[in-house]
Image 1: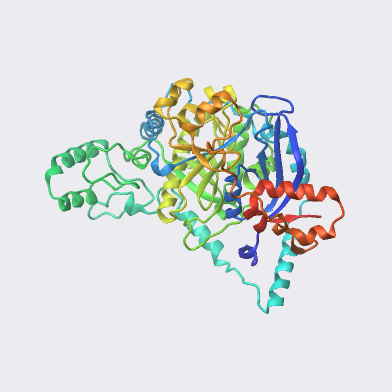
Image 2: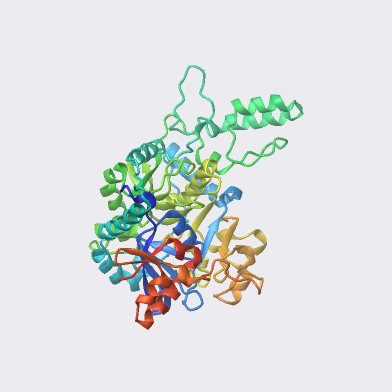
Amino acid sequence: MASWAALSPSIVEYFEGEDSYRCGYCKNESGSRSNGMWAHSMTVQDYQDLIDRGWRRSGKYVYKPVMNQTCCPQYTIRCRPLQFQPSKSHKKVLKKMLKFLAKGEISKGNCEDEPMEPTMEDTVAGDFALINKLDIQCDLKTLSDDLKESFEGEEKKKGKSPKKEEPKELIQSQHIEEKLGSGEPSHPLKVHTAPKPGKGADLSKPPCRKAKEIRKERKRLKLMQQKPAGELEGFQAQGEPPSLFPPKANKSNQPKSLEDLIFESLPENASHKLEVRVVRSSPPSSQFKATFQESYQVYKRYQMVIHKDPPDKPTVSQFTRFLCSSPLEAENPPHGPDCGYGSFHQQYWLDGRIIAVGVIDILPYCVSSVYLYYDPDYSFLSLGVYSALREISFTRQLHQKTSQLSYYYMGFYIHSCPKMKYKGGPWHGRWFPRVCVRQFLSPCMCMLLPPSQGQYRPSDLLCPETYVWVPIEQCLSSLENSKYCRFNQDPEAVDEGRSKEPDRLQVFHKKAIMPYGVYKKQQKDPSEEAAVLQYAGLVGQACSERMLLLRN
């Protein structure tokens, strides 16, 4: 990582106007409308603030649907993992995986995440040529050198030497990835049982507990309810492992937590072994580089079988551009997650080979789901649902150390597309169907939609006008009447983060950083101001003051 990276702000190039292109959902030839910008680099805090204003990224291209004009409005949706409880449908998927791992049993039922969403090309089709062109022409190294020169010049004026980042940070990052190799909680004492006397604990494996033992312990707990609290607590410490969100001490027979279901023990002679590894994709770690070709082959097969792409379409270049390249700067603050912030691939290894990869961003307040691809031979495992549950659990794990990181962003929710509502996934962030709309609802709201697997709840939708989060149950009746809705019911409420002082917006022009108020005095093109003001309104005041708007 360059020595100036710790000081580097986001650098973005905004594309004036609104793009119209073919909708990947309803197939309207020119109905999908969005604003976009190319992010040469971006801090995780800036991207967090942008997705909280309705933006999403595809590779280094960052876009925001024009909600009141686009044919299929796409509402940012997030789940609250700390309150999440797996539904019956989710438990079925987890049990199906456990049966397959333990005994090799293959379910003959219908796949619960049969793909119905558009491909990546469909979702940003109008920008494909632009992205390809920019990917060739944009020289980030030149920009970096220019920016570095600008910073060093400022530091010299102040009589200071620029701070240098120690190279050990990257080494530490790689070490952490090895620690997270199993994909299991990084605080084993909170998740695993104590090892048996005389045996060392294998912290890379889930707790060794049989269903029969669990039932016995629950029965004993019930019988011990009348005993002093101290005795009960001692029993729990040696027996059942405390969950991430322990139940009240006075209650017994609590339902299994998500972690209990995921990390349930397997017999010693299990038929298969599953590992989940979190590897940094940008900048690429040694683990990522070592598994790149294998990961790409899974992606290629996924695109060919699931999305019917011809063999020459899912190229290495396309894979790299959309699922490996990221503008997010890797950050490893002392109080952040052990793996740091930035872009990662969560690899699912079955018996020593990759069968699925979840592309995720780890941000200050959330884990943001980007995409999932998997080996079609394992569709019977409902890997879409399974990976979502693993990512929710992963978010809960990260929350243990970094308390503000407590949400799971699932991309975009599309209520107006009938195909999405009935069976396909409602998200645009991951271009694969995982669940249907019903999975976000409380029981009293389920009558609005066709039957489905289960519910990811509680969930919120982002109001497209005031950018506040509203529980999805409160949004559905409005969405039934109109595909575009303002969810905030307060008619007086406004966007608190709106651009109020555009002259404070930061511009990067000819190797110099300056406020827009200074920059505009040097410009004679009247269209320049309209483009800059449009950009400021979309990113908000805070981001406009932190990010550098590149102007040529």
